[in-house]
Image (cartoon, rainbow, N blue to C red):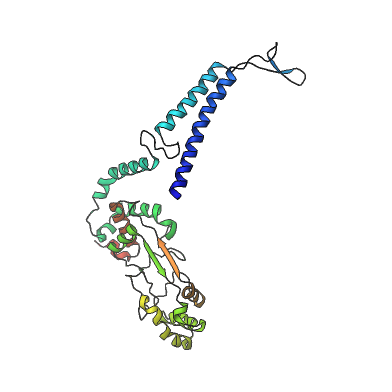
Length: 305
């Protein structure tokens, strides 16, 4: 049904465009054939006592310019997209031109990235040129969410603290950038029990990281935490295979405190990082991943000989 509607609109747009061009030529032809309306070649309209409207024919240079414009429009709409779903005889498209320009840019940059291919991430981290390129790639593709300093914000992971939801090795970072990630925690309140049980579990989660908590409520919530252990582990230390956060390290991605934890248990959460495999080449992703990996490493690692 949607294809039929889309094709119908395409035909409507094409028809309306063609009719408009034909109407312009017809209007010009009619205007050019108008005869003198009075002996003095006026239309009979007078303003300010002596300002008279004449019925002179259109200047020929203007008429020919108008005709050339209409003909140019017809040729353009034949050779390029513009008549509904008609792709144009040249087969040009903005997407195709973008792909061609991207391929040309990648070909020009290939010798630069070739010098980094196959090198260990530790070596790349010590290469000033590689890190400079990685910094620019990060600014253009990652800083919008993770911040210019890569420290993230609420809902966006900090990439400098060595706390990785999906693993922090160079290979895992390459995988994350290439394929993207989708982390989903379903609402768990029904599985935990009553609203008091949810509060008790929240207190138990706070206790896992040594945060201030109600010890009695945390003790009562320990058994109920079994509903969460399938993803977060029996001790709440997370599971990188599922992207389940570590609940025992005092790093809170979606907010800290009992209220934030209760909201998470009750409502769940879905976080999505888009895939960049179609935007960046494998060589670019390799350097970008090395830059991101280096952000969370001690200074002694990056500067080691």
